[in-house]
Image 1 (cartoon, rainbow, N blue to C red):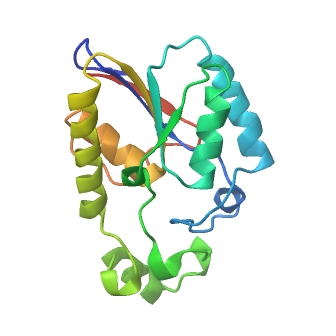
Image 2: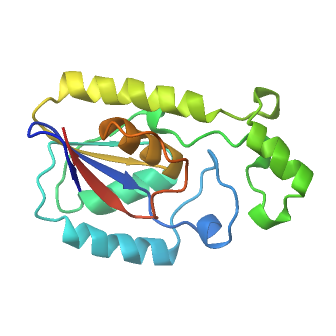
Length: 182
């Protein structure tokens, strides 16, 4: 929990575990769903947050995030706002590939994040998260908001909300929720 002020409570969540997470497959914007283990773990997270007040829930429109939001929402019965700004970073031609199957050359190409490979840059994701965060601050200055998104987005949104430099991606565990008070 990071406390900066006493107005908006922003709960940032990474979706639960998918089969592709379990198999170390690059997901990007694929339409994967939660695994059995992911569903079970999120049901426990939902119980932990059942008495937490949320005014609204936002989620990426991808199936794994919508499933995650719905599991948490079983105790809250709120409308879930889908927002494309919360979509996972586009992994382009690497979507569906096992991480360990990438050759050193492919890993270098992936790291470049070129549009010609259908990829999105980290700077572009950061910009989307800054836009979304600014929207939340203007719209929900004293509310409690749950945002269900993906690892890169959650990491960057957390960085923006806490006014800290982005540490890179891979900072949120599946099903993890962090609170930032703004």
